[in-house]
Amino acid sequence: MRRVVITGAGTVNALASDFPGTLAALASGRTAIGPLEFPDVERLSVRIGAQVKGFDPEALFDRTKLSLYDRFTQFALVAAREAMAQAGLAQVPGDPMRWGAVIGTAGGGNQTVNDAFRAVFAEGKNRVHPFTVPRLMNNAAASHLTMDWGLMGPAFSVATACASSNHAIGLAFQMIRSGMADGMLAGGAESMLNFGGLKAWEGLRVMSPDGCRPFSLGRNGMVQGEGAGVYVLESLEGAQARGAEILAEIKGFCMTSDAGDIVMPSVEGAARAMRGALADAGVDAEAIGYINAHGTGTAANDRTEAAAIHAVFGARAASVPVSSTKAMHGHCIGATGAIELAACLLALREGVIAPTVNFTAPDPDCALDVVPNAAREARVDTVISNAFAFGGLNAVLVLGRI
Image (cartoon, rainbow, N blue to C red):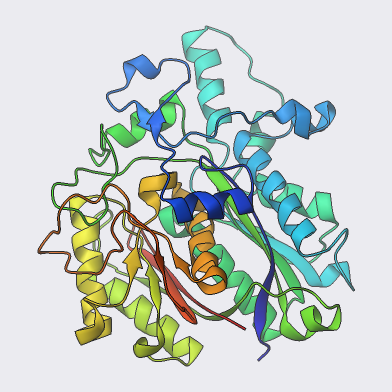
C-alpha cells in the first residue's frame, strides 16, 4: 500500500482567483458573501451568495473551446492549471495511462441547464445550443481535464451532493494507494448561482437571507457559493523521485451511508465516517489538531455534527479546534470539500487555523471550540476534513504533515 501526497493545489472561488489568495483570505477571516448579480435575481427570496466576480472566460480560454465549457468546467480547468503549475508539471510524468482525474459535482452544467430552460420557456425558442448536452453532463469537467493534460487512466465524475469532492479526492487517494494509478487530478467544481439553481434551493427552506453563521446561536441557514478546487495527488515515491514539493500527505479516508433520511443528517453515520477515516489513517482521535467541519449554518446540520464530534472525540471534543469556513466562501455544494481543503493545508503548512466567522454567541447544542471570528496560530500535524451530504452520504479525509 503506497503513501499518497498532494503536490499541487489550485482553486477559483469567491474569496480569490488562486490558491495563495484563498489562503490569505481564510487567514484574515474575510467573507466573500454579498449581493448576487444575475438575471431575475429580484424574483428570489434569497439574494445573497458567494459569487465569483471578475472571472473572464474569454481571456482564459480559446474561443473555439469555450463554446464547450459550462461555468463549472471553466472553474475546474483554471484550478487544474494552477495545481499542475504548483506541482512543477507541464505534463504528467511517466505513463499517461497511469494518470487520471476524479471531479466531484452535484449540479454539473447547471448554468447550461438554466440557460436552456430560459431559451425554451421564457424566450419561446425552439432550439437550444448544439453543445447543451456536452456542456451540462456531470463528467464534462473531468473529461476536459483529461484532454487538457493527456490523462489516459481512470477518469470520472462523482455526484454525492455536498460530499462530492471529498468522495472524489478519497477515491483518487485509494486508486493511487492501491497501485491502480500513479497520479490523479482530484477535487470538485460547482456553479449553481443562477435563478433556476437557487429557486430550487429556496424550496428546501434551508437558505439564510442574511448570512451564514455556523455553530452560532440563532443561525438560520446556509449561503451558497461557487467555484472549484483541484489537487495533484501522486505516490510519495513518485513525488520524491522527481523532487516535488510535498504539501501534505493524505493518510486516511472513509465513506459511510446513514441509510436514514434523504435530508436529515445522522449523528451515527457521521461518527462512523470519522472513526473509519481515523482507523484507515492509523491515528487516534488524540492526534487530530484541527477539524475542518462541514458546518453549513443550518440548525440541524451543526447540531448533528457537533454531537458526532463529541461521540468520536469524547472529552477532547470541547477543546480540539474546529472551524467551518463556509461563512467566508459559501457552501459550494459539490466543490465545497475541495475548497475547504485549503483550510486544512493552511493549518498544516502555515500553522494557522482559519476562523468560523459571523459567530455571535455559543449554542449549548454545539459545545465546540469553533475558533470564533479570528484565526488562531497553532502547531498542527494531523487534520480531519468532514463532508456530510443530503441523501445521508458521508466522506471524511485525514491529512498530515510530512
